[in-house]
Length: 379
Image (cartoon, rainbow, N blue to C red; front, side, top):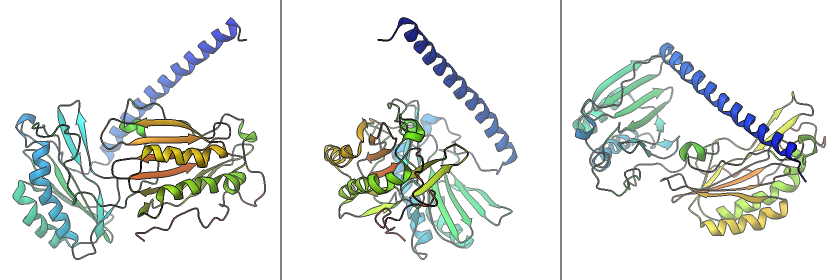
């Protein structure tokens, strides 16, 4: 039985935690704002604004941009790299963001390829992009030898960016803020275009659902409820728990094509703590779309016997965010996450902070497991 005084102290403690959380957020926001402003003053690179000079309602719509202008930009990308082996992705796919439902901006996927000559860049942009109303707004060489080019649509807004850095050339574009002409039910949903995004990019870090969907329930913390020194050791996790998690991954991926993040599984540590703590972070794997109910069934079958329970099951209504599932070992810590989207499925896991049981000379070195990381099919 909890006494009234205990209940009151608990409520006061929760209020104080909430108060200090708000204070921390406000302080970080202020520091971030001034820090960014100071950084911008020190690193003014002269990049042109993406906003158009026409009133918003008179600009080419976001739908017309995708139907009539974007294909020419994508043709420019194709022509630019056609003799260098094509392009590869190094960011998530294209997306459309909205400013309180009044304007929409398309942000392309970032791509890169082998180095292209300056002459070819100008020739390709002159043939494909400049006829669409874009003009050269920037051609700048930096101290490190890299070079940036920007073509801009001054009337409607939007830029096409090409950058040479060492042996690589990157390519990206943005529409600038555009109105909707009402020709699609939801302007946030990209009009299908098979040439737009290049398959194969997997983020090395778990995408934050709270960043994309402000109404999403809070994603669970990785650490467990047990005192850190009493949790299952990092060695036991690798020897006894991880094989079951990998079996779940294998059943999801099956024999279908897959992609992996550029960073492999890794161990992090905080040795200043006594006893030292260790975190395991897995390689992230992406495969084709999967059925949510089937994945939940598989997850429960593989993970429940290991002490993991499904603690997060949320399908975001926002386009492209996806359906997030997370199983957690509440006592020892550790999260297994599956994100199901219309076009793909992503899988990853973390151990949470764990102690070492001293069974290996160096806990920061992963215990060998030939099945842990999948080979990169694009390597």
